[in-house]
Image 1 (spheres, rainbow, N blue to C red):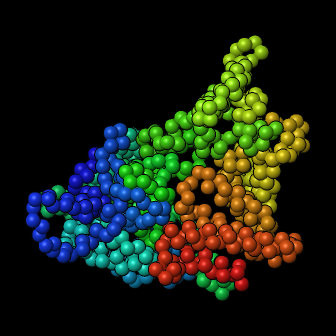
Image 2 (image 1 turned 30 degrees about the vertical axis):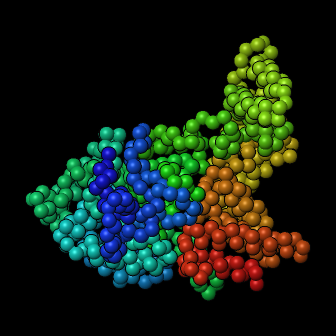
Image 3 (image 1 turned 90 degrees about the vertical axis):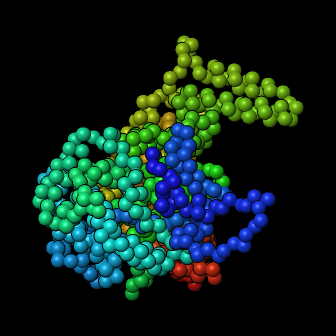
Length: 634
């Protein structure tokens, strides 16, 4: 457990700002005007670090917080890019920019410094100068030992940063000054300066050393030893700290590798371009990995109230929904659009725990997971969820209890509940009196064999695999046929039974719910296929399906959702050029809908990126959304 009292940024800042009032019997002294401490802005009052039984160290809200409020922005103690397409320091997409080379290393070597400007190169020089001579060796050793090169580079970058900071007493202040200047380029936040942790905070992160696989630890150890042997003369491996101990120690480096596996965070970027053919924006994509000790303080929840996103090498941390004072602040470590079984499996394999959040706890009412893993009765439509008999009975009993409370409040009888109980009792028995083990419709109680459900899911998986294979070969027309068959033939609709009969020769009794995870997985690709074919009406339909599914699972403040809202607005705005002519009345309706989508995206992006006091769009992504709106209104 980290010693919370010694946390230099997140943990102690709240303590610096919250002051104990003087007692009534003491004469009040005139308060001296204190110089504002770096990083002690309003955000320090928003949260605090506590210890909770069964949860360990937690971040909790110090007061009620509205959605979209910035808690802090942090620059990783050390960060590494995944490839040469982004700046090695600020992680902006290099695109058509003039690349500034970092040093004398062969630019084709993995991890070679490539910068978007001389400023970025200069800011990274102290650390990169120590790391650069070892880069060719890292590339060869990673291949020989079958160890991820990014992991090895990040371990050595942590060590290099530590050496640079301890050798140069003024470097930390210089780094913080440079980071603050960079931060002001994109943030309108009044919540103080960006955070930059020290080595002690990085070293205090949880490592789960005992849970790491023996074969993995053996391979990483072998690689770390080989790096030291091949580079023993380099300053990175030969330098010693003030107490005479070497900065680079194989055992400590192995623990750093474990910390990276357990507590590193991805870095994302997006790019808005202004070209002669108009403006365009890339979706967020993962471009690097870093260690962010303050961000690592947040625990996981499958219904998070906090999110973070990459911004020029920083991670900005904001509230994703309204938070009440005293609530724990949590992020999601994984993609939440998965079934409970898959989420638990992923968390256990990568983070070594099983989630016990509200979403993962058995509930008497319908919950998100009942929908994203749901098949529906073809007779009853979307509301006719087919569930395990035990789960269906539990939900009906909960409904009966609600009915009983309502009747009691109104002074009525509870005959309806008694009748429902009798029906439930009969419905849970087969003809020979044994208990049912199959699934059944929540509404009509029709029993559905597990074989039928598995057949449906296997058919969808098979078509998804074939579609994905064609999509990867850029055969978008072929992929679209398979993806559309999933949406049209195997997703619940009024004609689902007829379509499955035509496809299989016999109708299945069930279809996928529109927000089933198998449907959600293919929708972005199906959208791209239709956009390639300029089928803009279908594009708008699938973009809306994506947004509806996101609303079910993700928090209200979601950056990816704004992308699809803008995509929907864009394709509706292009209908004049579509191959199929659209009647003027329908076109006006589409344009109104497009403007509505654009305004929703702008409102969300204001919460996410912030904006000037005069409502100005200070961020490229906000500016992009505003331009799209202007195009539609013209």
